[in-house]
Structure formats: C-alpha cells, structure tokens
Image (tube, rainbow, N blue to C red):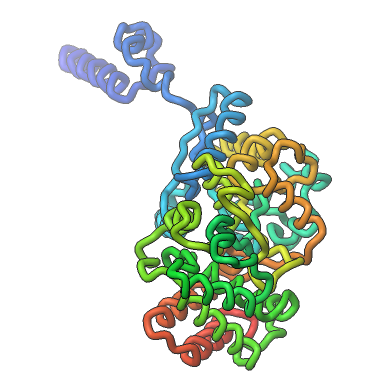
Length: 441
C-alpha cells in the first residue's frame, strides 16, 4: 500500500511540473524562469506596448493633403520619437471611400485610434450620436485651446457641453479657380454674379474653349452647394438647413435651374475624373474654370505653379463676402486600442507647431487663431482675411450642415438628376429628403 502511495505521489509531482511548464506560471516555479528558454524568447518584451503606437485614419493620400499630413507627422515624431505613427489613410472621393471603410471597422468593433471627420453635423449627427467618440474637455482645458480656437467653431464640435474633436484647419469651399491666360485671351473678366458667369462661359464655349472642368459626383455636389449659395444668398442658404427656407419654393427651383444650366458647360467625361484631374485641366489651359475647395491651391503649388500667373481665384459667382467653410477634425475613438498614443497625436494636431507645419502645405488656414500669417502664401493670407471678415456659412458636401443620413439622401437624388436631368423631380426628391432626415420632418 505504501509503495502504491509513493508511486501515485511521483506521478502527481511529474504532472504538476508539466502543468507549470505548459502554463508558463513563472512566479510559481522560480527554477523555470532561470531556464534558457525564457531568455531565448524576447518577442513579448520587444513588441511595442499600447502607448507606443497610434493609428491615424484619414483620406489624405495625394497632393498637398498627403504632404500636409506628412509635415504634421514629422512634428509628431520629433515630439514623441518612441510612438510609432501608423498612417491608415484610404484614398478616393473626398473621404467617401475612407468613411465606408471606417463604418465597416466601427461596426466590427475595430476602430482606429483617431480618425478624420468634418466639424458639424457629420461629427455630431454621426459619431457622437452613435456613441463612437470620446469627449475631450480635459484635453482642451489642459492645452488652453479654448483661448485660441474660434468661438464660432467650438459649438460645431460640441454636444451637451462636451467637446468631441480637435479641428486642425479651416477650408473654404466656395472658390472659383480660373486660368488667367485663358480668360485674357478670350476677353473674359472674372465673373461675380451667376449671370456674368453664364455670359463668360457662353463666350468661351463659342471660342471652342472648355468653360468648366468638373469631376466625379462628390465634386458635382460641391458645385451644387455653391450654386445654391450664389443664387439664394447666405440667409436663405442657411435656411435650407434649419427649416426656414422651403425646399419646395420657387427660389430653390430657380437655384436648381441655375445648377442644371451650369452643368451644361462642364466636360463630358467628368464622371471618370478626380478633383485633381479636373483642376489639372484648368492649370494646363484646357479649361477656364473649376469650382473646388482651397485644398486645390495646395495641389497647384505642389505642381510648382505660381499664383496670379498660372491660376487665379475668386468667390464663386454670387457669393462675394461669404465664406462657405469646412473644418477637418480628429477624434478619440471609444475603445481606442492605443489611447495614450491617440492623446499624443491629438495634442500635436491642436498645437500651434503642428498646425503651422500642416496648413501652409495642405492649402488651408489654421483652426487656431494665433498662427504666424507670414508662413502662408498669397492665397491663404487672403483666405485668413476673409475668414475674419466675411459672413460664414457651412458646407453640405463636407459635413457641416447635414448629418450623414440627410446628405446620403441628397446624394442619391443628385445621382438620379445627373442621369435624367429632371429639375422638377430633383426638387421633389430634395423636399422628400428634408422631410425624411432634415429639419422638415
């Protein structure tokens, strides 16, 4: 009996050592921690910790956009050399493709640490409403940002007393870019009203010059919002988004008629062109006008072009004295895999140094009010002056005035209109979209 008991105890001791070895319970087996195998497997201690990286998601992949992001990344890496910066940018469609990828990741519970979003309803009506981003009040207080961010911008990134993003720039949407040589050769002045623009494009068309360069569908929405603004004026344009302007009104019908007419002057291959392709037509002298945000200016300078010689600019017809804006912001994801890295990135994104590195290259002005104006070129200095003095309205295409649901319905209606050219049907669809997702419901 005693012999059997000793045998059983021996078996149990062997089994206990096997369990320790398989389970890796180093604290329970000091002798095992001294074995060579432990020192020969350093991967776990060498892999970056959660605080040692940050994944930043955007749609800045080309032109001045990518260069601006790279400039801010350089500032980040100098300040935080031990944090790996993972650039998770997705190309295409002014963020359309990127936001589709982002939506899939968020649904799967796989958020990037921080992502690019537009200040306004895109931010509040989508990510805040979905409980997908964290408030940043403590960060604002610690960095003193409430003293240097525009008072008009803070409400657009806030909800119920919480601030939800860090704006890195201000862009202008209502910019008419033109080729000075093309206009001069055809005796055309820069138009300031819709009627002047139609007359100018008629002259150019008769001379065999492509009047207007246009790209894929989101650029057509961008054009549409500037025509709505130029036809309706700032107050009535704002009323489209707060319910005080009737989408079914004759005034809106007149604006949509103007938009339909503008489209007749555009290149026939627009659906196959990016915004850069369309802008390139103007720079090359193959078209006279292009309506695009001022990120185009960053692209022009990247191409080595000279302002006032290779390209000129003006407010889109009918919108003099009005600054139609958008702002790129970065957020902190709920459940961010690397929250410390994300907070480090947001500090740089909101810093004077980060914004001064980013914006002159990107083709935008700082969201902060204390940036050095001398760092910016001629166009951006003029944008700074206008931002501080013009009437400010928000962009539809770039997320300020409408949440994602409403914007998607508008985009669907626009696609049908581009296919059939039916203005009455387009207006009816816009009325329905307001009733479904906007303030008209």
